[in-house]
Each structure stands twice: as C-alpha cells, then as structure tokens.
Image (tube, rainbow, N blue to C red; front, side, top):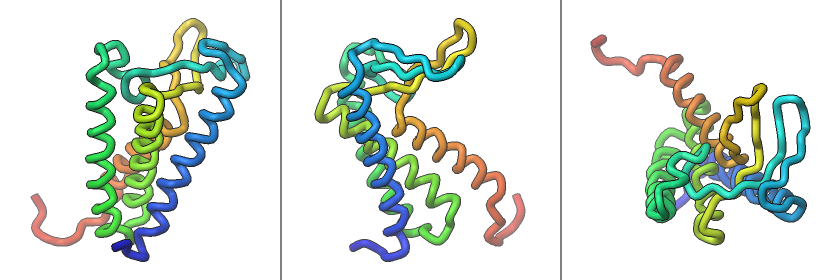
Length: 162
C-alpha cells in the first residue's frame, strides 16, 4: 500500500525516468551512433551506447554486467521504496533516495529493452573527456551528493555520543 507522504517521492522518481527516457528518445531520433554536436567549448551532445554502469563503469566486462546491473538496480529500488515510506518526512534524504531510484530505473528500462544504456552528455576540458552520461546518471549522482550532504547536516536524533 502506498503511504500518502511517500507519493511525492515516487513521483519525483517517475519524473526522472520520464525525463531520462524522453531525452534519450530525442537523441536517438536525431543522432547516429557516435555523432557529436558541440554545444559549448566544454560540452557536446553525442550518441553512445554503454554496456556498463554509470559513467561507463565495467562497460567492457564481457556482457555479464547487463544482468548484474539490472538486478542490482531493481533490488536497490525495492529497498529505496521501503525507505521512502519510512522516511518520507525527511526532505533532503527522501529527495536523494528518489533521485537515485529514478536514475537506476531509467537505466534499467534501457538495459531491459535495448541491452545497453543510451548516453549522450559529454563534458570535457581540452583533450580530457569525461565518459558520456545521461539524465538517469545525473539523478544518481545528484542523489548521492544529497545523501552525503544529508549525512553531514543531519540533526542528531538523541542517544549517547560516540
């Protein structure tokens, strides 16, 4: 049963998934694989396929990673959904979890349907390129950063100091 308080966080996750899938649709309908469009002196749009995890982690691992990352993302999403029901009042923590879950599930959609993840955001400086990524990866990264911030600024809940 959905807890009413958690609904907004599930909707945030859904928004990440929708934005991720819509942006991937726009890119794949406008670009050929490997095609690059410079936007600024440090940012390109480029269509790439990623067999690995966020930022191409384990992209060349030989194929086992597709099922591994799919199952991992689904298990993490189930755990996050439960946490959101319990902690829906903790805004920063819940937003972080919702962004991570949306990003994880956005990439799962690609892995299940296409067998790979569509990446298209490329940032670089001079000749140093960061691996291409997507909106889902951005959700995961922003969510992780919010988790770090939340842990740094969380008010103590009582108990004895360590």
